[in-house]
Length: 262
Image (cartoon, rainbow, N blue to C red):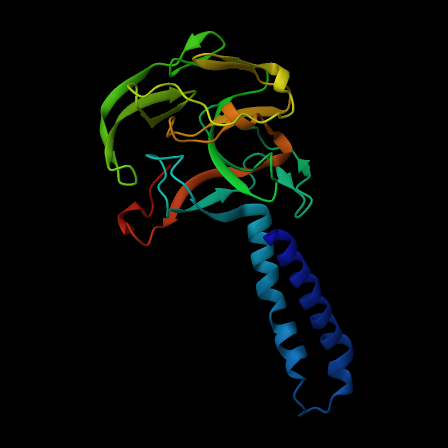
């Protein structure tokens, strides 16, 4: 569902009703006459819808974490805020960038339209920037030939699997974060789609190596053994990026998480 488009349509309808009531219908009514219900409610919603539309389009958009691919950073049920202007100002609905303010950096957690199905929103961490050579082999991540070290930081209990998995601290760019990694489990890959720039990737028996094309990004989930990401469906085009996630504003199951993230 394209919520931005629905909101825009509601904005246009309420704006037309507000303008018509303000400049046409009101002058035709008797001073003590009430406007028709459809005019009264339609016009009164216009300021509210306008504020929501502007905030959601240019400042902050809410997003709910739907899966466990970003555990332990983000949990299923987290409601997060997404900064819409960090990477530039985009036209609502069309999502076309008109003002450049910045670019995604390695380590950023971004919400984007899922390349195989742009009607869906996904969230992952940026690992590779345009031009980077990203390799994930034997569960070791390397960028441009430099191994990204990770340090053991205890265990993490995954309720869905009723099992403990290793938690590690990893540094990507300026961002230090935790990942989950089961080094005892075999290196396994889900179905790999025939995505754009597929020739930029080489699949090995124990990993994958990709050269990120211009204007695209390589993303991965922090739950490395349980994430459907760029290893399987390819790169994220810049025009598909919605914004940078930065704040947990609600979790009904675990209120203590409110205000967390970064």
